[in-house]
Image (cartoon, rainbow, N blue to C red; front, side, top):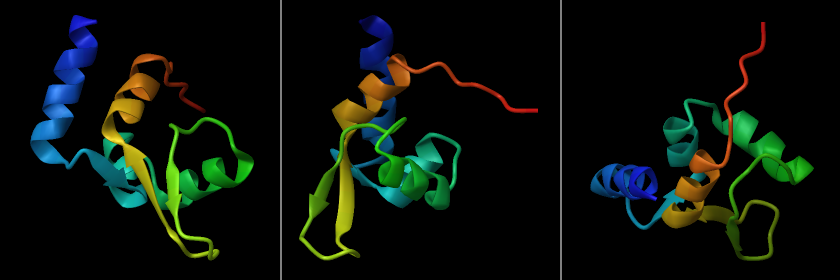
Length: 79
């Protein structure tokens, strides 16, 4: 639990309580296109909220959900 709180505090110092796809990609050392792919597949992505009904509606991630995702995910490196 202590580790989770440290991660949250560290991210909270840099980001708002919600983060965009671009910010999530930065946090996860990934790309926005990878985040988009995970959203389309509905897997390997923190919980998110879509703001609107159109295809291009903004997507945000609650920082607490991002921290949960980080703490419960093992990074796999592909060769």
